[in-house]
Amino acid sequence: MSPTPLAETLPEESFELQEEKRRALVFERHFTRSGEDPFEVVAWQRRDAVIQGAGGEVVFEQKEVEVPAAWSQLATNVVASKYFHGAVGSPERETSVRQLLGRVVDQLTEWGRHDGFFRSDEDAEAFRAELAHVLLHQMASFNSPVWFNVGIDTRPQCSACFINSVEDSLESILDLARTESMLFKRGSGTGSNLSTLRSAREGLSGGGTSSGPVSFMKALDAFAGVIKSGGRTRRAAKMVILDVDHPDIVEFIHSKQGEEAKARALKAAGWAGGFEVEGGAYSSVFFQNANHSVRLTDDFLEAVEKGEEWTTHAVTDGRPMGTYPARDLLHQMAEAAWECGDPGVQYDTTINRWHTCPASGRIQASNP
Image 1 (cartoon, one colour):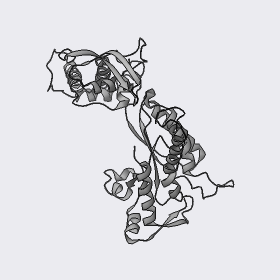
Image 2: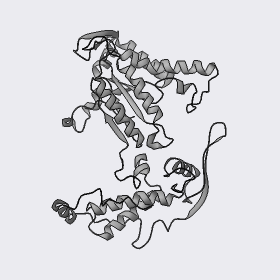
Image 3: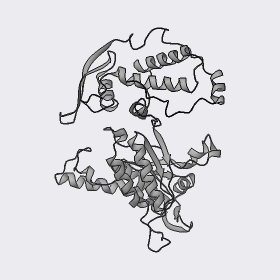
């Protein structure tokens, strides 16, 4: 597959770009030789890529996949099932690792030529050959969005990890849902700290009380569940975080634990227990599409050590809300994590103490 044309999407070379070309890279060869195609010095073979489910049923199959002979069957199955472009059986479907690696390497080389990264055509060819060698011999690999999108889309999404913010308004929450959905569609993962959302114990300006972050998490989780990452079979990667001083922290700690209990009850009643089964126990409960983590501060951990109380504070005006024994809160986190794997914990004070770019602002969240 040839790389995506760029002529209609990139501007003419500016004077600054011409100046940059004068300072462009001289690319040395370490693994390849000039005039030798790295794709032609590798032994190739064709084999079937087959993945079976727990019951022995075939969940993916593509016959006659061309791969380097040195690659394992596992590598063959993963690459064919996750990264080959096009629907299986269609004319557009990739059938060879040559095509997959070729479209990515050729596209990156074309971008490098256009943007003036290479001093000469020889340097561009050296870059192409060296990168192809590294990928063919499994010395390194790109992230999933690169394999999904480069050489396919005119302006591909290549980053795998995003951290998104949200403000305390319905409009911002809906914007977050849209942003996350589009990132999932292109194969990336996202993380968000929802501590900016007022708790279910706080009022709204027009009267009534807020739904709280745990309620909105249900909608965000549902979007992640229905949008496959990169349009493939890979699930969306999503992280949800809440600060330990948020008034809804107890509900957050137990949010996934309670849903897991429902899933176990459904399984006991006869519903299918497979995680990917449509209409099964796990597809019928919330919070199955994200990791949950509590953001802990040193102040909280010191309160745990000293056996002190811990007070949560309102998001809107900072007034004290619920107060709990700090040790009890930490024990609840540990108990829930033991039962269902979540919540994890993030050490906010340490993370920001080690922040390498503090002028850019505090680190509030992470990708999963």
